[in-house]
Each structure stands twice: as C-alpha cells, then as structure tokens.
Length: 270
Ligand code: APR
Image 1 (cartoon, rainbow, N blue to C red):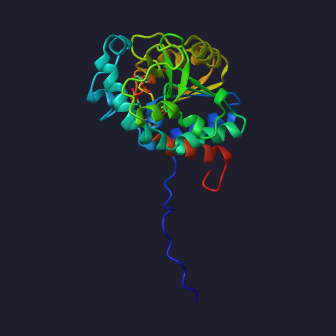
Image 2: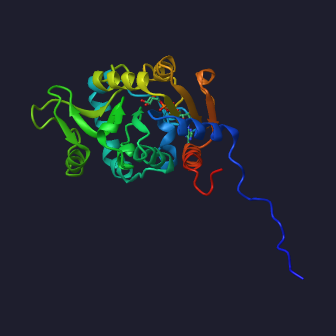
Image 3: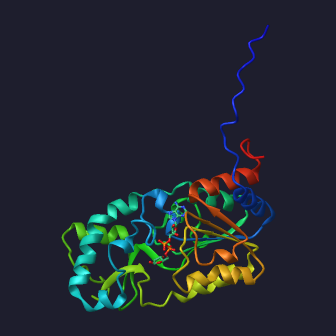
C-alpha cells in the first residue's frame, strides 16, 4: 500500500494572459527599445512624480527660471543635494533594470530611452551608449555659462567641505544639476537618437511612465507609426493605452522578469 502524496494545486499562479502575450512579442522581436519612466525606479526606493505620494504631490516642479533668478532657490537646491546625494548614490538597480540588462545580453535590446536621471540603467550593466537620457542626469552638475561638467562626487566633496553655493571652477559661472528642468528644451542629440531608435524598432516596451510630459510622450506613437508593436507596463492606465498592443498592469520588476523567463522557456516558463 503506498501513501499517495496529497495532491496540492500548483501554488505558482499562471502568468496573466498579458504577460504571456508580452513574452511572445519579446520572443518574436529582434530590435527592442525600452522607454522608461520613474515607475521603473520606485522598486529601488526612488519615488515617482505623479503616482501616489509622488514628488510633485509634495511641491511644484522647479523651473530653470526659478533656479537662475533666485539665489535663495539655488542655496536651497545645494543644501538639499548635500543631504540627499549619499542616499541617491546608494540606490541599487531593481529586478526591472536587471531584466532589461538581461535582454541586452541576449542581443534583443537595442537601447533604453529613459526619462529618468538616476543612472540606474547604467548601474545595472548597460553600456553608456545603450542608454539615452532624455532628461539628463543627476549624477553630474554643469556650468550654465561655459558648459563645463563636474562629477556628482566632486561637487559633493565641495559641499561637505562647506561650499553652500559652489560655482564653476573654470569660469566662476553658476553651476546646476545636469538635468532638464521645466521650461527648458530637451538636449538635441539624445532626442534625435531617441526618435531614430523609435522609428527603427520592432517592439517598444513602455515601462513606468504616465506619458504626460512632452515631447517624450510622443515616442511610443513614433514607434507605432514606424510599425512597431507596443507593450505598456504600468501599475495604472495612461492616456495612450488605446495605442498599446499589450497592456501589462502590475509592478515592472515582476512583469519584466516573468516575461523574460517565459520567453527563455526557463523552468517556470511554459
Ligand atoms: N511598476 C510599474 N509602474 C509603476 C511603478 C512600478 N513599480 N511605480 C510607479 N509606476 C507608474 C505610476 O503609476 C505612473 O503611471 O509609473 C508612472 C510614473 O509616472 P510619473 O511619476 O509621471 O513619471 P514619468 O512618466 O517618468 O514622468 C516624466 O516628468 O516630472 C517630469 O522630468 C520628470 O522625467 C519626468 C517626467
């Protein structure tokens, strides 16, 4: 007589249809572009802007005019940077970033176009030229007069040494974060490259963006117009959902990891 083991249902819930469809599109695609927003970094502990508790729910976004016209605004910025920089550089890439890095290693990801300024795509192992930073980077500062750039580490040392309004070491001009503020044009070369990549890809995966800020929010439509399939991964709906071929509602890290596992047919896959 054998003691038949009790039969338990498979505890691993089957991936939703949307993730299966996402995995199938990844499998069929050879030139994937990922378009990321703040939502891919929330699982690294960095708040987004418009989600619940987002940055803009705690105060209005700074404009370039605010920064250049007001010394008090600049002093407040440098004080915030002095205290928040260690926390910023301590953030680690999460499963979502690592999944995209894995897709690049498979030779399927041509580029990540990001609106983010946190540098986590590069930290996840993507080469610098595989990341297009549309809104610049918080990892550097630059001179508003001569354009000279200084690393975040170097400026942080100056702030810790007591500088409360560090100026350009080359020309004495005003220094600012190497990010794009409201009221500014996007840097031309990154935008040109982003449009070219969107036009040439066969799949664009839009991850963690509310798609409300222009001109970045046009890129999924550029990709669609160029014949690409569109997958949106988000915790909530966006105003462009009607254009997506697949909508994956959920956390980016889990959705991306599951889709890649399914695509690679790992033991958890079909
Ligand atoms: N997984 C999936 N989606 C997420 C996650 C997550 N873990 N966390 C947040 N989201 C979603 C939110 O629901 C929201 O729809 O990501 C989106 C983030 O939207 P925003 O906060 O508006 O960020 P983003 O679209 O990148 O903003 C664009 O606006 O303020 C400017 O320059 C700033 O680059 C930024 C630009």
